Image 1: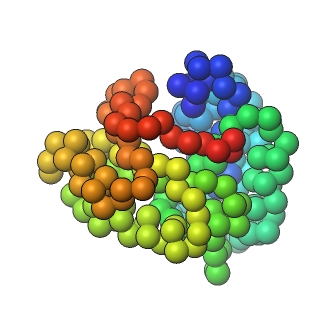
Image 2: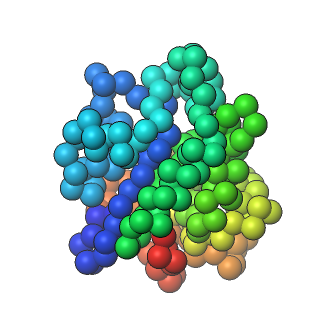
Length: 202
């Protein structure tokens, strides 16, 4: 987002669902990071607008919500995101929660949410041992739901079994039609190997 903003793009971010969220540790939350990235203060109004579904337990959203005797209304979640995307004249980045198959409700998972929004996906993965299988499985699941995948971003993990370039090269070999990018730890921006990510206006 910082890269896009510095390039003059209009950008908004959403993290509609977040678990493991507590006021005491707010500064370390994804919501706080995203608000800072787009230059917004951490006011109650901005927190509500960024992350309306917040849960304390660091579990899948369905489990975290159940512990608070709550549940995510899937239709309202989709409506909220779709409304924010449609009302904004620029790029909207919607951050998911966990992997593509993480349960949101008793019936829907994150992949159902992505498919319902009908916007391109950016698949963000690590470079840890096992990421090749996890990435290719998630990519296949998204493709099976006819989700357009704009790119794969390998966000370098703390521990890597091989140099991150080897992970990227392997993924690129198996995903020849999907741009694969690297985000090094502590980097200020993308080290792009290939064409830039096509955000498609959303």
